[in-house]
Length: 395
Length: 105
Image (cartoon, rainbow over all chains, first blue to last red; front, side, top):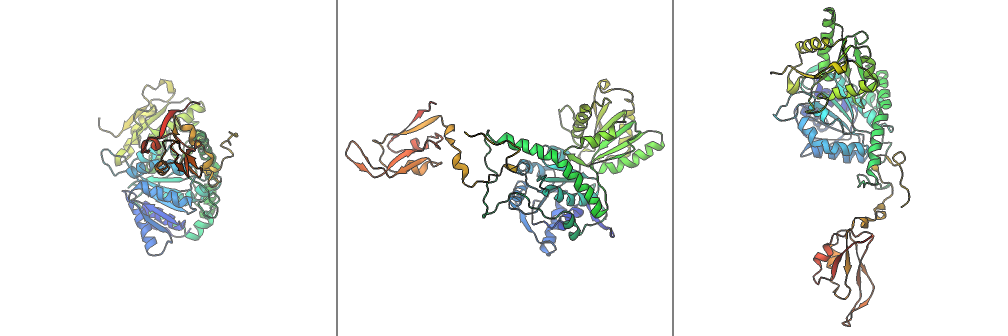
């Protein structure tokens, strides 16, 4: 590993995309993602990256353009946030069911209204049913590394799925950190361009994106579900080999102090960076707190999450998004609770929604959650009257 | 119809490997009204052929002599394999030679 250079999360992603030697980029500017594609257009303009940069009039067009380019066999990239991601939502399903290995990064941001350009996970969570593999990096280095891993995962003939890499808007996207940059040669050795699939080629004509009548549609949706399910193996292999190539180790799920924890905090994104020192401090004060970082969100890593919950007396799931009116309220909570239910884990599982619209997730918030959660030690899920609460909101 | 492949064996991503295979998809099953051409009234103006979006109007080199004694070199017929019964031909026909009748199967 060479010397790290100072990069924002956005620039770290741009350097990863350059290293992956993409052929086509199409994107539309939106805060807090804009700097990614600004940097990439600079790379293309000054000749550091030999790629087509397609300037489009919307995110709907951006994703549509990379769908077309990917169908033609190109290695592609796009990036977005919030409203832009929602505008892409329609095309996200098309990309996945057409099994196109597109890589997109999402600098996570709140969804309007009211207009808010700051971080939460509303956009990421709202797009989590579109059949994409979804990863979440906690810092600039992870955003960089996972973007490179995403190409290897997406183009694997056993997967052939689009991959989204999230990282927190502003907290990561605009924060400058020391980043070890992967060079092109190394990136292409780890993730060589693979086109082991059908592509649009006049010499060997095929039809893509056709009508799927009631006689056909169901089969292709099941095929997608099967592909996402089976991608677990591809993802796990890609992360394992990432360590062999670059020395940095990533797992689908990280667990810290979960072996003997009373309360396990389950969360995603940059707040993990605050939860860890909080847990260390809590332990010094005699509170057995564990932390679980869910790095892979789709397919949801059930086994890996469950492994860290089995000894817990209370599970506290921290969400930076609300699914209003749902039985879970917190979207991450939903997956954790279903996973626990399926395995008969009968401890209180509580949902804490915090940090919406750029509000900072502070140590005091974790203290409030853990204090509340400790009140449920020794109880069972059926004893919990209201499973969710909002932390850091004004009443 | 021959039995259709299951999801395990279909090409990934709904790719269709056989070019031009859409002709195998007989869209006539959508039809609830069937256009019927009255060859006596038809003046061979070709407007139905022009407007048909499928196209499912056949222009056949089949001479036809009307009761008036007039002989036409061509005959227009409906391709009932693909006609979806939209009724555009009947709407556009300037001499009302096409009627839409209920499809009974």
